[in-house]
Image (cartoon, rainbow, N blue to C red; front, top):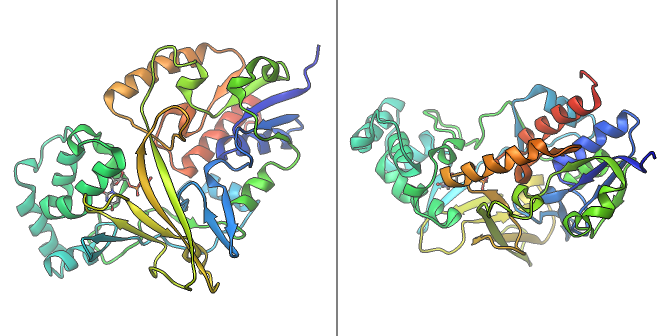
Length: 371
Ligand code: UDP
């Protein structure tokens, strides 16, 4: 018997929404379900005082993938926001990412050669070695001063473990530059969707049936019966009832306040890099969209241990978790008529553009479109 839907899409974040858009465009029938009371996954914004508040943490879109950029621009345009966060270390302010402004603020150096000499002096025994963990990688890249002031405290709060117990790739997400340039990303394109992320995901989901407040894992049998193929973007280990054990994730607590002032911190993102401050960053949402409202909304972000019942925001891709993820991936490949994708189902620290690329590729494969 023909089922009601071609695709049951579990999770309406970017993976699910992009997949759904491609499927609808090819005449497929899609049911999108989400456990939350809204669509958009972690890109979802709550509108407070006319300000788009990034409910689940700051989302700044950036990519060098022409295909992804072109695809998104079919649905929204982007403003010209460039992320230039500051680091506050015990009251001292430094520019991020690590660039000539940071080096000048720290050491008074003015030229790239002077900065490189300073870093070389501080690399010590880590120069030229193959770094075994985040601490060694950071010391090798930027030397001890930057590591102590701008990396160690932030990283250990963020991940809840010693920098010596974290994979080195995490710190390589940040650019290191010997020019005066505070752009946090090296990508070709950057910005925030005009009208906010809800405008984007709303358009991507046009034409789908949507069921909110619906947890796939609690109603698996009846939901599965509705569609030929499932597109699953939830947690990989949860899909398999944790039968091989739990992978680790990092959670966050967001403390959001509306303030009766037009401008709280003069920047969208300020990181608090000292271990003595319990939060990692403060986001002032209006600055993502150059807001001119009389009020402002800020979110103080506290990293938290993940446990069942909390939101999983980051996979912890160390060797042990990756080994377990690989075992789950073997199970996933054997699962007939289920497509897994997104940060949680792939258990990878993807940026938004990587999720979109994966969804476009998965849709192309599933729909045989040869895009
Ligand atoms: N990081 C740091 N100091 C900072 C900002 C970032 O040491 O002020 C490190 C930290 O280990 C963090 C990683 O760089 O987990 C990646 O930072 P990114 O801003 O990419 O993290 P996200 O925005 O995804 O939380």
